[in-house]
Length: 166
Image (tube, rainbow, N blue to C red; front, side, top):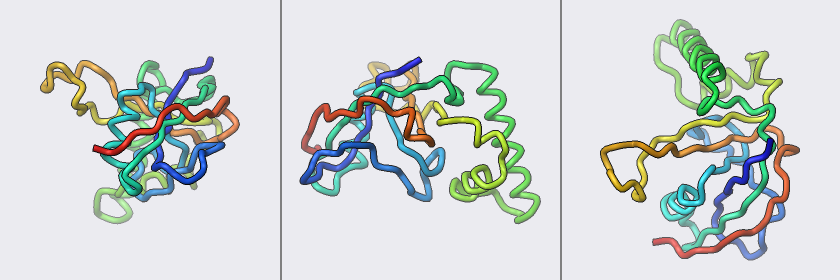
C-alpha cells in the first residue's frame, strides 16, 4: 500500500531530486527520511523548523508502507513498539543510572535491535500541537510522521510548493 506524504526542506538553489536524510541527534525516530502525512503539518514544520533561507519547499512522494512499523493505526505494532522502547530505556537506565537521550535510545536500537533490520520505516504520531486545531486544548487530529529507513520505499518524489517563512 502507498501513502502520499510530504517532505519539507529549506529552499535551495536547485530543486531536490530525492529527500534529504535527517541526522539530527534529537530526531524522534533516529536517522531517516522524514515525511508528514498531511500538508498542513508539512507547512507548519516549514514555518517553524526550516527557516535558514527564509523560504521552505514541500515535496510529495508515494511511500510504500507495507513493511513500515505502524504505531499510529495498528494496535499490535503500537504495543510492540512501546514494549521495545521501554525495554531499551530500562536497559540504558540500568547501565548508566540515568534516562537515555533520544540519540542514545535510537543508537541502541539501530545497533542492537534485531527487529529493526526487518522494517523500512516507522509511522509515529508526533506531538499534536498545531495552530490549525479549531479547539486548541483538544488534540483530536493526529500529526503523523513516517521516518523512512530504506529509501527504496520512496516513489515519485516531486516538488510540490514553495513558501516564505512567517
